[in-house]
Amino acid sequence: MSAVPQTQVSKERQDFYKRIDTGHVAPLWEVLHDLITPKPKTPCVPVAWKWQTVLPWIMESGQLITAKEAERRVLVLENPGLRGQARATHSLYAGLQLVLPGEIAPAHRHSQSALRFIVSGDGAYTAVDGERVTMHVGDFIITPSWTWHDHGNPSSEPIIWMDVLDVPIVELLDAQFLERPGVEKQTIVRTEGESFARYGNTMMPLDYTPRSHTSPLFWYPYTRAREALATLAASENPHPCHGHKLQYINPANGGPAMPTIGSFVQMLPSGFKGRDYRSTDSTIFSCVEGRGRVNVGEQTIEFGSKDTFVVPSWMKYRFEVEEETVVFSASDRPVQQALDLWREEA
Ligand code: 1HN
Image (cartoon, rainbow, N blue to C red; front, side):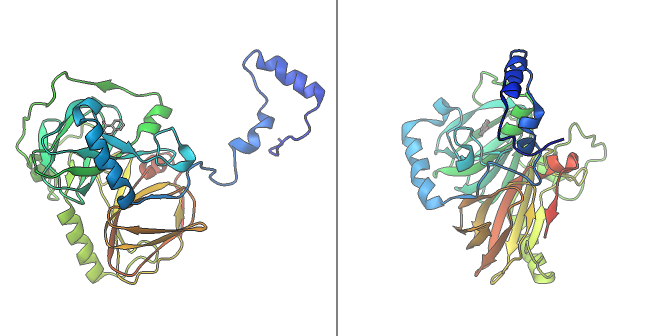
C-alpha cells in the first residue's frame, strides 16, 4: 500500500485511469494520502464574529425583509474555510436570528435539531411542540428533531439569538425532512413552564418513557447555569484548561441534551490563564459575560460579551482572561463519542 502522493504518473497508468474512469471507477492509491491522514485535516479555520461588526448588519436585515417573508431572518456565520456552504464548522450550521417587536417566524418542523442561545433582548418567545417559553439573555433552548416550532416577539425590543443546527450532519446522511403546517402559529396545548416543572428540577414524572434520545426539557435558563457556575467557582479549583465547565444534559439519561449537538457553559475566573487543550470536535463559542483572549494555533482572538468564535478540530487553544468571563459552546461531540471517534489532549 502506497499512501504517498503519486507525482510522476506514467502514460500506461494514465491510460488505465482513463479507461476505468468511463466505468465510474478510480485508483485509490492516487488519493489515499488525502483520505486517510495522520491527524484531522479540517477545512474549518479559527474565526471570530465580533458583535459590534455583525449587529449593524443584523439590524439592517430587519429593514430589508420581514421574519415572515424570510421564514427565518438569519445571518449565517460562515467559516472562511467553508464559504458558500452555510457552515460555521465542518459539521455544524450557526447563524444569528433577529425577530423584531410584533413579528412572528412561522411554524415548521424539520429533521434537523436546533439550539438557540439568546444573545440580546428579552421577552420574545419560542414555542416547541405546543409549549411556549419566554427567552432571556444566556438561556439555552433546544428544538428537538421533528418538533413544531415558531418564534414570536410580543416585547418592545428586538431579540437576537444564535442558532446552531446539525444541518451538515443531516445532509451527510441524506435524512432531511421539512414540513410546514400552513398556519403561522401552532396551537398552544401546555402552560408555559410545564416542561420545566416536569423535567427541570432533578425530578421526573413516575411514568416517564423516553420517546427519543433528546431531552424532554427544552429550556435551560441562564439564571440556573450562572448560579451553578458561581457556586462551583467558590468551591472548587478551576480545571487547568476549562475553568469551571458544565455540560447541558438530558435529565432522563444523563447524556447530551441532543444526540447530535453537545452544549456547554464555562466560567473562567478573573486572572485565569488556561493551559493548552485540543479535542476533535470543532467548537462554536459565544461569550455571555466578560471578555478575554483565546490563543488558537498561531492566532490570538480577542473576544467580549456577545462575540462568537470558532476553534477547529484538533487545534490547540487556551483561554486567558483578566475579568470573570462566561462562555457558552456547542460542538458535534455527542456524535463523535457515539461513534468512538472523540479524542482530547490536555
Ligand atoms: C430553522 O428552522 C431555524 O427554526 C433557524 O429558527 C435557522 C437554519 C437552517 C435550517 C433551518 C428556526 C435554520 C433553520
